[in-house]
Image (cartoon, rainbow, N blue to C red; front, side, top):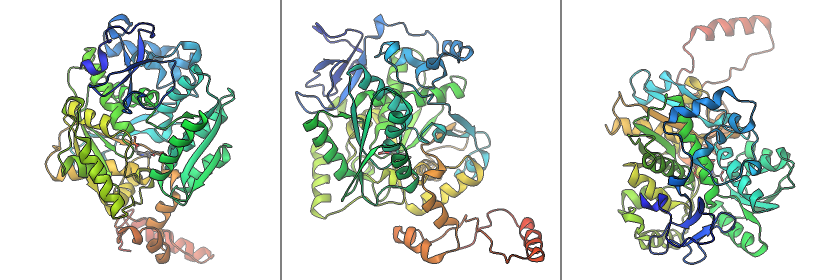
Length: 488
Ligand code: F0G
Protein backbone atom coordinates (compact mmCIF):
# COMPACT_ATOMS: atom_id res chain seq x y z
CA UNK A 1 0.00 0.00 0.00
CA UNK A 2 2.38 2.67 -1.17
CA UNK A 3 -0.28 5.31 -0.59
CA UNK A 4 0.35 5.23 3.12
CA UNK A 5 3.80 3.97 3.50
CA UNK A 6 6.27 5.19 0.97
CA UNK A 7 8.26 8.33 1.57
CA UNK A 8 8.17 10.47 -1.56
CA UNK A 9 11.37 11.33 -3.34
CA UNK A 10 12.73 14.78 -2.60
CA UNK A 11 10.89 15.26 0.65
CA UNK A 12 13.63 17.75 1.44
CA UNK A 13 13.14 19.86 4.50
CA UNK A 14 10.07 18.01 5.74
CA UNK A 15 10.37 16.09 8.94
CA UNK A 16 11.17 12.82 7.26
CA UNK A 17 9.62 10.36 9.68
CA UNK A 18 6.05 11.69 9.72
CA UNK A 19 4.48 14.10 7.29
CA UNK A 20 1.14 14.96 5.69
CA UNK A 21 0.31 13.83 2.22
CA UNK A 22 -2.56 14.44 -0.17
CA UNK A 23 -4.49 11.22 -0.81
CA UNK A 24 -4.99 12.04 -4.49
CA UNK A 25 -2.48 9.93 -6.48
CA UNK A 26 -2.46 12.57 -9.19
CA UNK A 27 -1.23 15.12 -6.64
CA UNK A 28 0.50 13.46 -3.66
CA UNK A 29 1.71 16.82 -2.37
CA UNK A 30 3.50 16.48 0.96
CA UNK A 31 3.64 18.83 3.91
CA UNK A 32 5.35 18.90 7.22
CA UNK A 33 3.42 17.85 10.33
CA UNK A 34 4.05 21.37 11.62
CA UNK A 35 1.72 22.80 9.01
CA UNK A 36 -1.94 23.43 9.65
CA UNK A 37 -4.32 22.85 6.79
CA UNK A 38 -7.38 20.74 6.47
CA UNK A 39 -7.38 20.12 2.75
CA UNK A 40 -4.58 19.86 0.23
CA UNK A 41 -3.68 23.46 -0.70
CA UNK A 42 -2.79 22.26 -4.20
CA UNK A 43 -5.80 20.20 -5.21
CA UNK A 44 -8.29 20.45 -2.33
CA UNK A 45 -8.34 16.73 -1.58
CA UNK A 46 -8.08 15.05 1.83
CA UNK A 47 -4.79 14.70 3.66
CA UNK A 48 -3.25 11.70 5.40
CA UNK A 49 -0.61 11.52 8.07
CA UNK A 50 2.07 9.25 6.60
CA UNK A 51 5.08 7.64 8.22
CA UNK A 52 8.41 6.36 7.01
CA UNK A 53 7.97 3.09 8.84
CA UNK A 54 11.32 1.68 7.76
CA UNK A 55 13.07 4.22 9.94
CA UNK A 56 10.71 4.11 12.92
CA UNK A 57 10.90 1.77 15.91
CA UNK A 58 7.80 -0.39 15.54
CA UNK A 59 7.18 -3.51 17.65
CA UNK A 60 7.73 -6.78 15.82
CA UNK A 61 4.58 -8.25 17.35
CA UNK A 62 1.42 -6.62 18.67
CA UNK A 63 1.86 -8.53 21.92
CA UNK A 64 4.91 -6.36 22.63
CA UNK A 65 2.43 -3.61 23.55
CA UNK A 66 1.53 -5.66 26.61
CA UNK A 67 4.72 -4.40 28.26
CA UNK A 68 2.94 -1.05 28.70
CA UNK A 69 0.27 -2.63 30.92
CA UNK A 70 2.65 -2.84 33.86
CA UNK A 71 3.46 0.88 33.80
CA UNK A 72 0.12 2.59 33.99
CA UNK A 73 1.42 5.44 36.14
CA UNK A 74 2.92 6.85 32.96
CA UNK A 75 -0.07 8.80 31.50
CA UNK A 76 0.96 7.79 28.00
CA UNK A 77 0.78 4.12 28.92
CA UNK A 78 -2.49 4.65 30.78
CA UNK A 79 -4.08 6.22 27.70
CA UNK A 80 -5.85 3.72 25.46
CA UNK A 81 -4.58 5.73 22.50
CA UNK A 82 -0.99 6.58 23.39
CA UNK A 83 0.00 3.20 24.69
CA UNK A 84 0.04 2.43 20.97
CA UNK A 85 2.06 5.55 20.24
CA UNK A 86 4.54 3.69 18.03
CA UNK A 87 1.63 3.31 15.58
CA UNK A 88 0.88 7.04 15.45
CA UNK A 89 4.34 8.54 15.86
CA UNK A 90 3.78 12.14 14.73
CA UNK A 91 4.31 13.99 18.01
CA UNK A 92 7.15 14.45 20.47
CA UNK A 93 6.27 12.91 23.80
CA UNK A 94 6.18 16.24 25.65
CA UNK A 95 3.53 17.63 23.29
CA UNK A 96 1.01 14.86 23.88
CA UNK A 97 -2.32 16.01 25.34
CA UNK A 98 -4.10 13.19 27.14
CA UNK A 99 -6.96 13.09 29.63
CA UNK A 100 -6.95 9.33 30.12
CA UNK A 101 -9.08 8.47 27.10
CA UNK A 102 -9.63 4.97 25.79
CA UNK A 103 -10.35 3.00 28.98
CA UNK A 104 -12.92 1.03 27.06
CA UNK A 105 -14.30 -2.50 27.08
CA UNK A 106 -14.75 -5.23 24.56
CA UNK A 107 -17.78 -7.00 25.95
CA UNK A 108 -19.03 -10.41 24.85
CA UNK A 109 -22.79 -9.91 24.65
CA UNK A 110 -24.66 -13.15 24.08
CA UNK A 111 -28.15 -11.76 24.59
CA UNK A 112 -27.50 -9.13 21.94
CA UNK A 113 -25.76 -11.82 19.88
CA UNK A 114 -28.91 -13.90 19.98
CA UNK A 115 -30.92 -10.94 18.69
CA UNK A 116 -28.41 -10.49 15.88
CA UNK A 117 -28.50 -14.23 15.11
CA UNK A 118 -25.00 -15.12 16.26
CA UNK A 119 -23.75 -18.27 17.95
CA UNK A 120 -22.83 -17.86 21.65
CA UNK A 121 -19.58 -16.02 22.25
CA UNK A 122 -19.34 -14.65 18.72
CA UNK A 123 -20.74 -11.13 19.10
CA UNK A 124 -18.77 -8.53 20.97
CA UNK A 125 -19.54 -4.90 21.65
CA UNK A 126 -16.68 -2.42 21.71
CA UNK A 127 -18.02 0.03 24.24
CA UNK A 128 -16.64 3.48 23.45
CA UNK A 129 -19.17 5.20 25.71
CA UNK A 130 -16.65 4.78 28.54
CA UNK A 131 -14.47 7.56 27.23
CA UNK A 132 -14.26 10.73 29.35
CA UNK A 133 -16.76 12.60 27.15
CA UNK A 134 -18.89 9.50 26.62
CA UNK A 135 -18.09 8.73 23.00
CA UNK A 136 -15.36 7.42 20.71
CA UNK A 137 -14.50 10.98 19.72
CA UNK A 138 -11.98 11.27 22.54
CA UNK A 139 -9.70 8.87 20.66
CA UNK A 140 -9.41 11.42 17.89
CA UNK A 141 -9.49 14.51 20.08
CA UNK A 142 -6.41 13.53 22.04
CA UNK A 143 -4.46 13.29 18.78
CA UNK A 144 -5.89 16.49 17.27
CA UNK A 145 -5.24 18.45 20.48
CA UNK A 146 -1.71 17.13 20.47
CA UNK A 147 -1.25 18.47 16.96
CA UNK A 148 -2.97 21.76 17.89
CA UNK A 149 -0.45 22.11 20.70
CA UNK A 150 2.43 21.38 18.33
CA UNK A 151 1.32 24.18 16.01
CA UNK A 152 0.54 26.51 18.95
CA UNK A 153 -3.17 26.82 18.13
CA UNK A 154 -5.39 28.44 20.74
CA UNK A 155 -8.89 28.71 19.28
CA UNK A 156 -10.24 25.33 18.23
CA UNK A 157 -13.54 24.77 16.43
CA UNK A 158 -15.78 22.08 15.04
CA UNK A 159 -19.18 21.54 13.51
CA UNK A 160 -20.96 18.70 15.21
CA UNK A 161 -23.99 16.53 15.61
CA UNK A 162 -23.04 16.64 19.30
CA UNK A 163 -20.31 14.22 20.24
CA UNK A 164 -17.40 15.93 18.55
CA UNK A 165 -18.44 19.17 20.20
CA UNK A 166 -18.79 17.47 23.60
CA UNK A 167 -15.31 15.97 23.25
CA UNK A 168 -13.85 19.27 22.08
CA UNK A 169 -15.40 21.05 25.05
CA UNK A 170 -14.11 18.42 27.49
CA UNK A 171 -10.54 18.57 26.16
CA UNK A 172 -10.56 22.38 26.47
CA UNK A 173 -11.90 22.32 30.01
CA UNK A 174 -9.93 19.34 31.33
CA UNK A 175 -6.55 20.55 30.10
CA UNK A 176 -4.97 23.76 31.23
CA UNK A 177 -3.31 24.74 27.99
CA UNK A 178 -5.28 27.86 27.07
CA UNK A 179 -7.45 26.26 24.40
CA UNK A 180 -10.76 28.00 23.68
CA UNK A 181 -13.62 25.90 22.24
CA UNK A 182 -15.95 27.19 19.53
CA UNK A 183 -18.61 24.81 18.33
CA UNK A 184 -21.16 25.00 15.53
CA UNK A 185 -24.31 22.95 15.80
CA UNK A 186 -27.51 22.79 13.79
CA UNK A 187 -30.21 24.23 16.00
CA UNK A 188 -32.55 21.59 17.37
CA UNK A 189 -30.41 18.83 15.80
CA UNK A 190 -28.39 17.77 18.80
CA UNK A 191 -29.35 15.40 21.61
CA UNK A 192 -29.71 17.00 25.03
CA UNK A 193 -26.93 15.07 26.73
CA UNK A 194 -24.46 16.43 24.20
CA UNK A 195 -25.73 19.99 24.27
CA UNK A 196 -25.55 19.85 28.06
CA UNK A 197 -21.88 18.87 27.84
CA UNK A 198 -20.96 21.71 25.49
CA UNK A 199 -22.64 24.23 27.76
CA UNK A 200 -21.36 22.80 31.03
CA UNK A 201 -17.77 22.68 29.81
CA UNK A 202 -17.84 26.31 28.76
CA UNK A 203 -17.64 26.08 24.97
CA UNK A 204 -18.78 29.00 22.85
CA UNK A 205 -21.83 27.26 21.37
CA UNK A 206 -23.10 28.68 18.09
CA UNK A 207 -26.44 27.25 17.05
CA UNK A 208 -27.04 27.99 13.41
CA UNK A 209 -30.35 27.65 11.66
CA UNK A 210 -29.68 24.58 9.56
CA UNK A 211 -28.37 21.07 9.88
CA UNK A 212 -24.94 19.47 10.34
CA UNK A 213 -24.05 19.80 6.67
CA UNK A 214 -24.73 23.56 6.88
CA UNK A 215 -22.72 23.85 10.11
CA UNK A 216 -19.82 21.94 8.56
CA UNK A 217 -19.77 24.25 5.57
CA UNK A 218 -19.72 27.32 7.81
CA UNK A 219 -17.10 26.14 10.23
CA UNK A 220 -14.70 25.46 7.36
CA UNK A 221 -15.22 28.97 6.04
CA UNK A 222 -14.79 30.53 9.47
CA UNK A 223 -11.74 28.45 10.35
CA UNK A 224 -10.13 29.50 7.08
CA UNK A 225 -10.96 33.18 7.46
CA UNK A 226 -10.03 33.51 11.12
CA UNK A 227 -7.20 31.00 11.26
CA UNK A 228 -9.00 28.84 13.81
CA UNK A 229 -7.81 25.27 14.26
CA UNK A 230 -10.41 22.83 12.90
CA UNK A 231 -11.16 19.74 14.98
CA UNK A 232 -13.52 17.88 12.64
CA UNK A 233 -12.48 14.51 11.27
CA UNK A 234 -11.36 16.20 8.07
CA UNK A 235 -8.33 16.93 10.25
CA UNK A 236 -6.04 13.96 9.51
CA UNK A 237 -4.58 13.97 13.02
CA UNK A 238 -8.03 13.19 14.47
CA UNK A 239 -8.10 10.00 12.46
CA UNK A 240 -4.67 8.96 13.70
CA UNK A 241 -6.12 8.78 17.22
CA UNK A 242 -9.22 6.93 16.07
CA UNK A 243 -7.06 4.11 14.73
CA UNK A 244 -6.57 3.17 18.38
CA UNK A 245 -10.15 1.86 18.63
CA UNK A 246 -9.01 -0.98 16.39
CA UNK A 247 -5.80 -1.53 18.37
CA UNK A 248 -7.89 -1.98 21.51
CA UNK A 249 -10.27 -4.36 19.75
CA UNK A 250 -7.27 -6.47 18.74
CA UNK A 251 -5.89 -6.21 22.26
CA UNK A 252 -9.24 -7.38 23.65
CA UNK A 253 -9.13 -10.39 21.32
CA UNK A 254 -5.60 -11.42 22.28
CA UNK A 255 -4.35 -9.80 19.03
CA UNK A 256 -6.47 -12.11 16.87
CA UNK A 257 -8.35 -10.07 14.20
CA UNK A 258 -12.13 -10.62 14.19
CA UNK A 259 -13.96 -11.55 11.00
CA UNK A 260 -16.07 -8.40 11.02
CA UNK A 261 -15.98 -4.86 12.34
CA UNK A 262 -19.40 -3.22 12.16
CA UNK A 263 -19.56 0.54 12.61
CA UNK A 264 -22.14 3.27 12.10
CA UNK A 265 -21.31 5.71 9.31
CA UNK A 266 -21.85 9.46 9.59
CA UNK A 267 -19.03 11.73 8.54
CA UNK A 268 -17.08 8.49 7.90
CA UNK A 269 -14.10 9.36 10.08
CA UNK A 270 -14.18 6.15 12.07
CA UNK A 271 -14.46 3.80 9.11
CA UNK A 272 -11.65 5.73 7.38
CA UNK A 273 -9.43 5.53 10.44
CA UNK A 274 -10.14 1.82 10.94
CA UNK A 275 -9.20 1.16 7.31
CA UNK A 276 -5.95 3.10 7.71
CA UNK A 277 -5.14 1.19 10.89
CA UNK A 278 -5.50 -2.15 9.08
CA UNK A 279 -3.58 -0.98 6.00
CA UNK A 280 -0.67 0.00 8.24
CA UNK A 281 -0.83 -3.08 10.48
CA UNK A 282 -0.77 -5.31 7.42
CA UNK A 283 2.10 -3.40 5.88
CA UNK A 284 4.04 -3.70 9.12
CA UNK A 285 3.40 -7.43 9.26
CA UNK A 286 1.58 -7.06 12.58
CA UNK A 287 -1.57 -8.80 11.35
CA UNK A 288 -1.89 -11.41 8.66
CA UNK A 289 -5.66 -11.37 8.30
CA UNK A 290 -7.77 -8.29 7.62
CA UNK A 291 -11.23 -8.05 9.17
CA UNK A 292 -14.09 -7.16 6.86
CA UNK A 293 -15.65 -3.78 7.48
CA UNK A 294 -19.40 -3.12 7.50
CA UNK A 295 -20.44 0.54 7.53
CA UNK A 296 -24.04 1.16 8.50
CA UNK A 297 -26.00 4.26 7.48
CA UNK A 298 -29.38 5.30 8.82
CA UNK A 299 -31.80 5.24 5.95
CA UNK A 300 -32.58 8.92 6.45
CA UNK A 301 -28.88 9.72 5.91
CA UNK A 302 -27.70 7.12 3.44
CA UNK A 303 -25.28 8.84 1.11
CA UNK A 304 -22.61 6.16 1.41
CA UNK A 305 -25.08 3.32 0.98
CA UNK A 306 -26.56 4.96 -2.11
CA UNK A 307 -23.25 5.85 -3.71
CA UNK A 308 -21.56 2.51 -3.06
CA UNK A 309 -24.56 0.20 -3.20
CA UNK A 310 -26.50 1.78 -6.05
CA UNK A 311 -24.19 4.07 -8.01
CA UNK A 312 -21.17 1.81 -8.07
CA UNK A 313 -18.75 4.27 -6.46
CA UNK A 314 -15.46 2.56 -5.57
CA UNK A 315 -11.93 3.54 -4.57
CA UNK A 316 -10.33 2.79 -7.96
CA UNK A 317 -6.77 3.09 -6.65
CA UNK A 318 -7.40 6.54 -5.31
CA UNK A 319 -9.24 7.89 -8.34
CA UNK A 320 -12.93 7.28 -7.57
CA UNK A 321 -15.39 8.94 -9.89
CA UNK A 322 -16.40 11.81 -7.62
CA UNK A 323 -18.69 13.09 -10.35
CA UNK A 324 -21.09 10.39 -9.14
CA UNK A 325 -21.07 11.94 -5.67
CA UNK A 326 -21.44 15.45 -7.05
CA UNK A 327 -24.55 14.54 -9.07
CA UNK A 328 -25.98 12.80 -6.01
CA UNK A 329 -25.47 15.98 -3.95
CA UNK A 330 -26.94 18.11 -6.74
CA UNK A 331 -30.04 15.96 -6.65
CA UNK A 332 -30.30 16.33 -2.87
CA UNK A 333 -30.10 20.10 -3.32
CA UNK A 334 -32.57 20.16 -6.18
CA UNK A 335 -35.13 18.18 -4.22
CA UNK A 336 -34.23 19.93 -0.97
CA UNK A 337 -33.59 16.56 0.69
CA UNK A 338 -32.10 16.94 4.15
CA UNK A 339 -30.72 14.16 6.31
CA UNK A 340 -33.28 12.98 8.85
CA UNK A 341 -32.96 10.21 11.43
CA UNK A 342 -33.55 9.61 15.14
CA UNK A 343 -29.85 8.69 15.20
CA UNK A 344 -28.99 12.40 15.21
CA UNK A 345 -25.25 11.67 15.55
CA UNK A 346 -25.19 10.31 12.00
CA UNK A 347 -27.72 12.70 10.48
CA UNK A 348 -25.27 13.69 7.76
CA UNK A 349 -25.74 13.74 3.99
CA UNK A 350 -22.33 15.02 2.89
CA UNK A 351 -19.70 12.92 4.66
CA UNK A 352 -16.38 14.72 4.47
CA UNK A 353 -14.34 11.52 4.63
CA UNK A 354 -16.17 9.77 1.81
CA UNK A 355 -13.02 9.11 -0.22
CA UNK A 356 -11.04 7.71 2.69
CA UNK A 357 -13.97 5.48 3.56
CA UNK A 358 -13.91 4.13 0.00
CA UNK A 359 -10.26 3.25 0.56
CA UNK A 360 -11.16 1.45 3.78
CA UNK A 361 -13.97 -0.47 2.10
CA UNK A 362 -11.62 -1.46 -0.69
CA UNK A 363 -8.86 -2.69 1.61
CA UNK A 364 -11.18 -4.43 4.07
CA UNK A 365 -13.51 -6.01 1.51
CA UNK A 366 -16.22 -3.88 3.04
CA UNK A 367 -19.96 -3.70 2.73
CA UNK A 368 -22.43 -0.89 3.34
CA UNK A 369 -26.02 -1.17 4.50
CA UNK A 370 -28.80 1.14 5.64
CA UNK A 371 -31.14 0.50 8.56
CA UNK A 372 -34.43 2.16 9.46
CA UNK A 373 -35.06 4.20 12.59
CA UNK A 374 -37.37 1.39 13.73
CA UNK A 375 -34.51 -1.10 13.42
CA UNK A 376 -32.16 1.30 15.19
CA UNK A 377 -34.49 1.86 18.15
CA UNK A 378 -35.26 -1.85 18.52
CA UNK A 379 -31.57 -2.72 18.39
CA UNK A 380 -30.84 0.00 20.92
CA UNK A 381 -33.37 -1.50 23.33
CA UNK A 382 -31.77 -4.92 22.89
CA UNK A 383 -28.32 -3.48 23.55
CA UNK A 384 -29.70 -1.79 26.66
CA UNK A 385 -31.23 -4.97 28.02
CA UNK A 386 -28.31 -7.20 27.06
CA UNK A 387 -25.27 -4.95 27.03
CA UNK A 388 -23.94 -1.72 28.42
CA UNK A 389 -26.32 0.56 26.56
CA UNK A 390 -25.77 3.08 23.80
CA UNK A 391 -27.23 6.03 21.97
CA UNK A 392 -29.31 5.50 18.81
CA UNK A 393 -26.51 6.00 16.24
CA UNK A 394 -24.40 3.34 17.93
CA UNK A 395 -27.23 0.83 17.73
CA UNK A 396 -27.12 1.16 13.94
CA UNK A 397 -24.10 -1.14 14.11
CA UNK A 398 -26.09 -3.87 15.86
CA UNK A 399 -29.10 -3.39 13.56
CA UNK A 400 -26.71 -3.57 10.61
CA UNK A 401 -25.05 -6.75 11.87
CA UNK A 402 -28.51 -8.29 12.24
CA UNK A 403 -29.37 -7.36 8.67
CA UNK A 404 -26.11 -8.85 7.38
CA UNK A 405 -26.79 -12.02 9.39
CA UNK A 406 -30.27 -12.29 7.88
CA UNK A 407 -28.79 -11.88 4.43
CA UNK A 408 -26.26 -14.60 5.18
CA UNK A 409 -23.34 -12.23 4.58
CA UNK A 410 -22.29 -12.70 8.22
CA UNK A 411 -22.28 -16.35 9.36
CA UNK A 412 -23.48 -17.30 12.87
CA UNK A 413 -20.01 -18.50 13.82
CA UNK A 414 -18.13 -15.42 12.58
CA UNK A 415 -16.34 -13.31 15.13
CA UNK A 416 -18.16 -9.97 14.99
CA UNK A 417 -17.36 -6.72 16.78
CA UNK A 418 -19.98 -3.98 16.74
CA UNK A 419 -18.69 -0.57 17.73
CA UNK A 420 -20.91 1.15 20.27
CA UNK A 421 -19.80 4.66 19.54
CA UNK A 422 -21.65 6.69 22.18
CA UNK A 423 -23.02 6.41 25.70
CA UNK A 424 -26.64 5.59 26.44
CA UNK A 425 -27.13 8.83 28.41
CA UNK A 426 -26.27 11.03 25.45
CA UNK A 427 -29.84 10.92 24.17
CA UNK A 428 -32.36 10.29 26.95
CA UNK A 429 -35.15 11.81 24.84
CA UNK A 430 -35.12 8.94 22.35
CA UNK A 431 -34.82 6.30 25.07
CA UNK A 432 -37.64 7.64 27.23
CA UNK A 433 -39.92 8.09 24.21
CA UNK A 434 -39.37 4.43 23.27
CA UNK A 435 -39.88 2.93 26.71
CA UNK A 436 -42.37 5.46 28.07
CA UNK A 437 -46.14 5.33 28.16
CA UNK A 438 -46.78 8.82 26.85
CA UNK A 439 -48.24 8.20 23.41
CA UNK A 440 -48.08 11.83 22.41
CA UNK A 441 -44.38 11.95 23.22
CA UNK A 442 -43.83 8.69 21.34
CA UNK A 443 -45.46 10.16 18.24
CA UNK A 444 -43.58 13.42 18.51
CA UNK A 445 -40.13 11.93 19.01
CA UNK A 446 -40.36 8.60 17.19
CA UNK A 447 -43.59 8.36 15.20
CA UNK A 448 -42.50 11.32 13.09
CA UNK A 449 -39.41 9.26 12.16
CA UNK A 450 -41.35 6.21 11.04
CA UNK A 451 -40.96 4.32 14.32
CA UNK A 452 -44.38 2.78 14.98
CA UNK A 453 -43.71 0.04 17.49
CA UNK A 454 -41.75 -0.24 20.69
CA UNK A 455 -41.56 -4.01 20.63
CA UNK A 456 -38.84 -4.20 23.25
CA UNK A 457 -40.12 -1.45 25.53
CA UNK A 458 -39.70 -1.78 29.27
CA UNK A 459 -42.61 0.35 30.43
CA UNK A 460 -42.55 2.25 33.70
CA UNK A 461 -45.46 1.21 35.90
CA UNK A 462 -47.71 3.82 37.47
CA UNK A 463 -48.87 2.87 40.97
CA UNK A 464 -50.85 4.75 43.57
CA UNK A 465 -48.88 5.88 46.60
CA UNK A 466 -50.25 2.95 48.57
CA UNK A 467 -48.29 0.13 50.21
CA UNK A 468 -50.68 -2.66 49.22
CA UNK A 469 -50.82 -1.47 45.63
CA UNK A 470 -47.06 -1.32 45.48
CA UNK A 471 -46.67 -4.84 46.89
CA UNK A 472 -49.33 -6.20 44.50
CA UNK A 473 -47.56 -4.54 41.57
CA UNK A 474 -44.20 -6.04 42.48
CA UNK A 475 -45.79 -9.48 42.80
CA UNK A 476 -47.46 -9.09 39.44
CA UNK A 477 -44.55 -7.66 37.48
CA UNK A 478 -41.64 -9.49 39.01
CA UNK A 479 -43.12 -12.70 37.70
CA UNK A 480 -43.48 -11.38 34.17
CA UNK A 481 -40.49 -11.79 31.82
CA UNK A 482 -38.43 -8.62 31.62
CA UNK A 483 -39.05 -6.19 28.78
CA UNK A 484 -42.11 -8.08 27.60
CA UNK A 485 -42.92 -6.69 24.17
CA UNK A 486 -46.00 -4.55 24.12
CA UNK A 487 -47.00 -2.66 21.04
CA UNK A 488 -47.12 1.06 21.36
N1 F0G B 1 -21.76 7.34 16.33
C1 F0G B 1 -21.79 8.44 17.09
C2 F0G B 1 -22.30 8.32 18.47
C3 F0G B 1 -21.34 9.67 16.57
O1 F0G B 1 -21.35 10.76 17.32
C4 F0G B 1 -20.89 9.72 15.23
C5 F0G B 1 -20.44 10.97 14.63
C6 F0G B 1 -20.88 8.53 14.50
C7 F0G B 1 -21.33 7.36 15.07
C8 F0G B 1 -20.40 8.50 13.10
O2 F0G B 1 -19.03 8.50 13.05
O3 F0G B 1 -18.63 10.46 11.61
O4 F0G B 1 -16.84 8.81 12.12
O5 F0G B 1 -18.74 8.21 10.64
N2 F0G B 1 -20.58 12.10 15.16
C9 F0G B 1 -20.01 13.33 14.64
C10 F0G B 1 -20.20 14.46 15.62
C11 F0G B 1 -20.36 13.64 13.25
O6 F0G B 1 -20.23 15.62 15.20
O7 F0G B 1 -20.26 14.19 16.80
P1 F0G B 1 -18.26 9.02 11.77
